Length: 544
Ligand code: NA7
Image 1 (cartoon, helix red, strand yellow):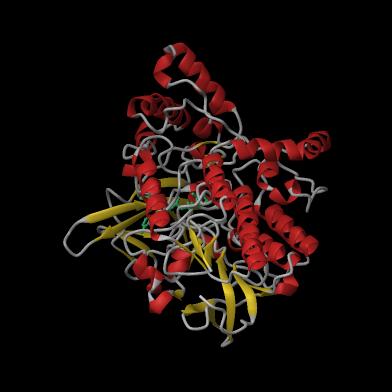
Image 2 (tube, rainbow, N blue to C red):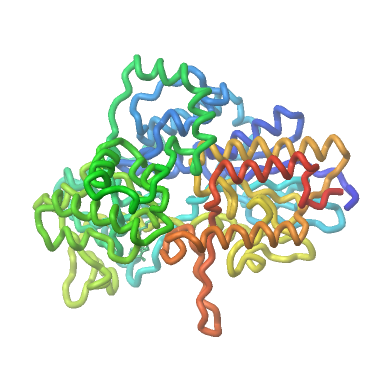
């Protein structure tokens, strides 16, 4: 495809989160003209939007901070093993200062549409401030969890109290999260995923009454957070390069490898001792460093699920409440395991009430609260911790059209089809970082997103050096990749579970299609494939 006109920018990057600002920085450093766009007032992405009480990393801070690993932030001092949101936002801001990135961004601006111009081989972009511009390469770094899922409950507009989604926490004039005083208030939290599990124990401390509206319980395990001493931080800082090398070897880029044994290969005593040890350790270990067949074998999984269920029964005093908090619909770890701090003990408080909305659904909201059957649950505040339209949700909200006007939302109607999760045939020069079917969305984003931005930068430099201005996958490469992604996922226990990483399509003929949005083949395998493709002259891509 010849280059007919010079675009306004070589590249447009959508998103100023951890991955987006690094991508913008890399392109700028390598002499490309680049514009970044973000709906927020400043950098931060997920750390900008999620300001609810209790919001924090459940990745070890030092293993998330790729900036430190790449030498951009070598002096940063983390105060806790699992940093809270304000510290995370300060961190991303400090990194943005270091990269001097804000001069390249348009904030408080959304991309409304991106239309590939077949004749000119550019993307025509429309922004919501009325600006029209063009770019050669369109790169999305919109984050896997940025499009809020706000349920369409009947009557929510008639509710007289405050109601908001967890990722849109009310803010003061200075932009900081509003410190809502819950004392004397009746608060409802809808949703018990990773977000709800972080919010609930904090709000319970001061609310007059807290009603937890639970549709499905999750398997939650202790976070085990603690402060980091100066000595510990000094040691971590000295080990940054080793930590990066280590996390690159693990499937999810978190600092955990699976145990080599199958659960059935050890005695019951040994198994229990192993689980006890994992349960007491901070972080994701119990999920990611358990027996190697945890997510492949129902029998193996049941050992751990039974162990965690027993812990829940020990920690929650009322046996009926405890049973309601134990998942029955999905194996342990088949959905994201929320990391908790005093979550289960919170249900022992007199002011906390668990409402099973699968058993007794909320019919509608009325002026004074939630109507369930003939009862009104009186509320002053409702927090929707109802999650996100995962991975592709943020792209679906932009009118993206490729060759001959084909809409991305139509092309991916029953699930994404991509090569390496980075490009889709029919959408030339469009790259999706931390997007569907690549080794970032189901990975420690702070590490995997950055590695991917580096890979894309190298590909664009390769193209520039050879005078190529057009890249899209070949059909065969895309089919092979997509089929492998679906097949890998189908082999796991995650395949039958509803979570934000599965797209469910109800077809007009009554059939239901369930497709994974994420790649579960593991980071090392993903990067190996990407390196092979690059080494072989970007084999699988049509370049011209
Ligand atoms: P999640 O993990 O998707 O959890 C959303 C929760 O909200 C979950 O309990 C849902 O129940 C519930 N939900 C969703 N829609 C409704 C409606 N309409 N009514 C009642 N309850 C509802 O999102 P989170 O924000 O907690 O976590 C997202 C990620 O952020 C997490 O994986 C981390 O990586 C960081 P359901 O299970 O669907 O029955």
